[in-house]
Amino acid sequence: MLGEYGLPDDHTFPSATKSCAILGRLDVGESVHCLVVKTGYDFDVFVCSSLLDKYAKCGDIKTARKVFDEMPERTVVSWTGMIYGYAQLGLNEEALKLFKQALYDDLELGKQIHGFCVKTSFESSNYVGSSLVSLYSKCGVIDEAYLVFAEVPVRIIGMWNAMLIVCAQHSHTNKAFDLFKEMEVRGIKPNSITFLCVLCACSLAGLVEKGQYYFELMKEYGIEPRARHYASLVDLLGHAGKLLEAVSVISKMPIAPTESVWGALLTGCLFMGTLNWLPMLRIGFLSWVM
Image 1 (cartoon, rainbow, N blue to C red):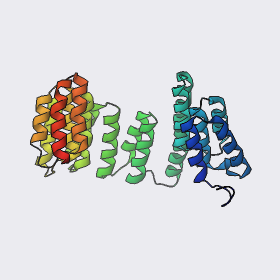
Image 2: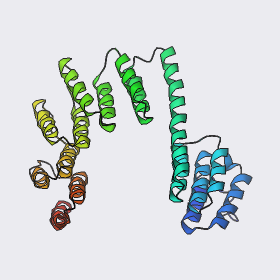
Image 3: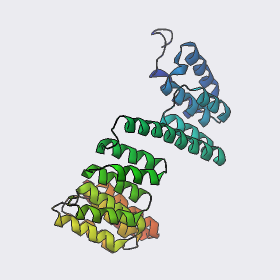
Image 4: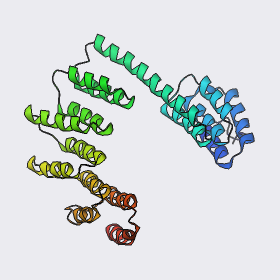
């Protein structure tokens, strides 16, 4: 290609470095790196991310970190590649330090954006507020997420759902129930996403009766459960050891069970160590795909 069609670009280099990583050819990868520098692509975030990934997978973690540190811009792919590189070499402390740095950098940038939103009077927007809630949640600063939520004067359903997701992900189960009750008091009708959030909260907390209650409550609001709702319920029952009930739920589904539903049941079987159920699951799965 170099001889007949000219120089590679930002699509070609990542493919070449990935091939070097798969083959463990550090020597060829170094030659590709030299060409990257000569052609000026050492400032491209995608090319640099592929380079550090290649060095990490070839065991040259020092060079990988050098590429990472010299990147003018980093994406989540860059951070993940570097963290994974440390982890696969057993450098767990370095991996955790870099992970914390990634969260800190995101949080600092998020705070700046939040400040700009306040200055421009966009902090009361439901769409901006939902994004900020998600940002603080992913950075582990849950109190700030609650504060942003509380400061939005008029909340639409998307804002409530964003906060419910936070509660589910961080195991603030009682808070999720309180928010749901508050929605009912305020006359805000929950939608399918709302119930999915609450079901996930129940599943993570292992609250079977609560999960079943909210699953049945959907029908009172005129919401037909979708595959994801069934998957959450099956997951909840499976982890509680109620495999027969989980199978019963699947058999009575008015819609065809999806891979997420079967996967939830399979996970429950593996979680309980009930491997003798696997042949039955195989028959059920085959009947679904046929």
